[in-house]
Structure formats: structure tokens, C-alpha cells
Length: 126
Image (cartoon, rainbow, N blue to C red; front, side, top):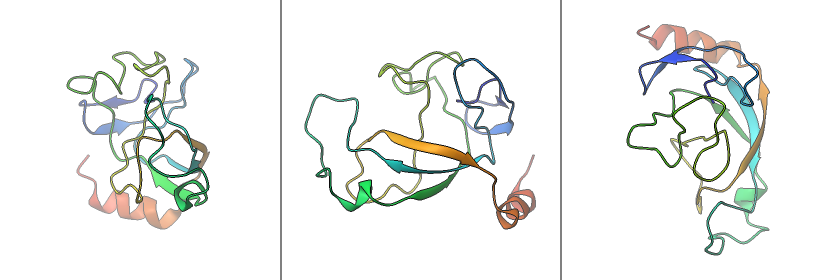
């Protein structure tokens, strides 16, 4: 996901754009999206396909990177490679909605609001 973004394995310090099959979503990248009623596991869905988790649109901001060490199933070692579940992107939601269960998430990258950029700059220690 970081696509050559620079970080220490937990917190990213720089974002880059690239073309290795991933979207360069480094720190302070924003997106808008929805969960899909599907996940990479063989057990049934926790929520039913018409549940509110699949109807709501969420705004997200990337705050850290996906470290491979200790999280090998979800975070591939090299950018552009799929994880254990065959996908190249993975979001860990800090505050997931009720009935969340690693559902697939579709999104479109958006410009982060100016107020968020200012807050990030004020709180950042980079």
C-alpha cells in the first residue's frame, strides 16, 4: 500500500506515487469508501448483506504503515505483492464499525480536508 513510502515499519514519514500495482496511500492520504458483504475467509458473514455496515460511506485517513514483521498474513514484505489473501491493499481500522469482520473495502482516494492537514501538521513529530 505504501508503494515506496518511507517509514519505520509502524509510522510512515513520507508518501510516494508509483505504479507497482498498489495505490500510494502513505500518511495523510484520505479516501472515501464502503465495506462489501464479502471477506477472504471460508466462514459465513457476521453481518447480513443488507446490514448498515455495508450501506454507510466512510471517510478514512491513513495514519501509519502496515508492518510485515508480526503481521505477515495481512502485510506483504514488498510493495506491489499481494498478501496471504491475494490482495495488495490492507487497512487496519482504528475504530471499526459494529459487526466489522475484515470485510473487503472499496474506496476512492480524495483530497484530505485542509482542517485535517493543519491538525496533522500541528500534532506531527516528524
